[in-house]
Length: 151
Image 1 (cartoon, rainbow, N blue to C red):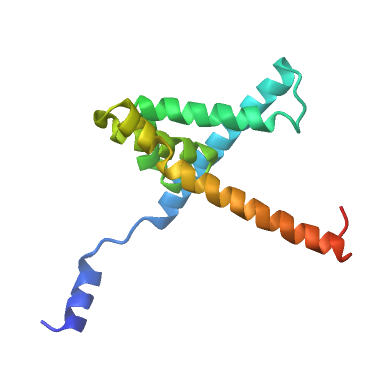
Image 2 (tube, helix red, strand yellow):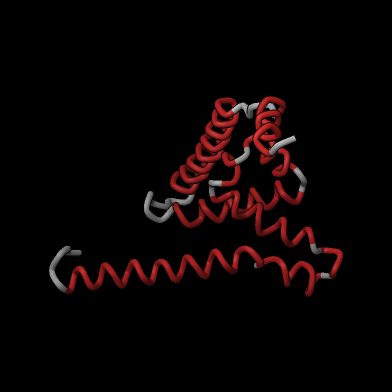
């Protein structure tokens, strides 16, 4: 069988992925996660007298904690299998990824297994976040200094 014939046969046999259905599920679950995040933010604003500007950090920490808790209970994996990117793109996906690496290596012990792998993903995310923030701030400083933009 020639290469072109094989590729044609493969295209005929391979089922087409349900793109619209997958996008709808990701959109729904991602939106639901964001709605829960908004509810958490309002909780901090109403009950702890935070402002909209100051409620962001505890809201993010709470959402990451919820994701880590659901990952530990084995529920976030089911959400991820259903929603795909809808559960991975919000900040909860970061919490899931951090805890998943730690849980995967827990048999190696607390220090070398959990501790050593807890920041396997988080370390690179933090590193590139800090580096990119530095360069953005540097570019803004240069643009302000030469008078292109103002604070």
